Amino acid sequence: MIDIEAFKRMSYGLYIVSSGNQDEGNGYISNSVFQVTAKPAQIAACCNKDNYTSKIIEKTGSYSISILHNEAETSVIDKFGYQSGADVDKLQGMKVEYGGTGVPIVLNSVIAWIECKVVKTVDVGTHIMFIGEVLQTEVIDDSKPSMTYKEFKEKKNRVAPANAPTHIEEPSDSDETSGKSSSGKYQCTQCGFIYDDSEEDTPFEDLPDDWTCPVCGAKKSDFKPI
Image 1 (cartoon, helix red, strand yellow):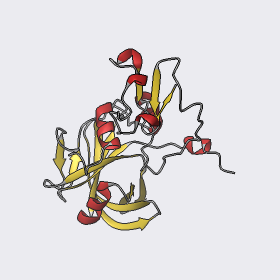
Image 2: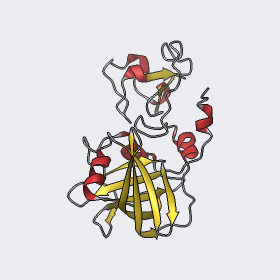
Image 3: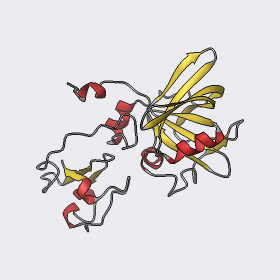
Image 4: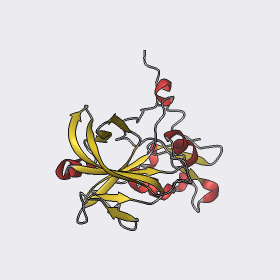
């Protein structure tokens, strides 16, 4: 028996993992970043094979990790967590520096960053685990603690993207995912965004069938009343 509630008790951080160079760069939100050795210092980052960034890391052989603080802007998380670099330039409008390998380092809502050179890759099914030797690090703000995955879910009303290692397919209930909400609130089952009738010009039920979630692009039918 597997009780998915056990997975929800595990603790994670929240990071932006980036790769590329000044000509082409991209990044994604990850909660699966961890140190694997001390000497030499090595960090592992898991990336879905379908992620646009995965191909860039394989091509360049390097990546950066930006550690988000606990008051990180929702817009930053949404851009890197629920959009594809194949469709949008995620680095546009962001504060970015470039490391010694040329890799982009995102500084928005960040307290520290780490630059890594890939020394090993491990195929773990849907994901690739990139193990990188640490080349350089910098703490840029020691006044705030890092954000945890628990805070990300509770403060930002978001869930793990479908490509995340920790994404959990919640049991569906036809009564729960259809019908009218008594509270006037509807939640996206893909990213957790809440559409609140009291804050919008158009009631959810009156939205056209081809309307999509403004955060992740999920269909209207992917919303459930709450």
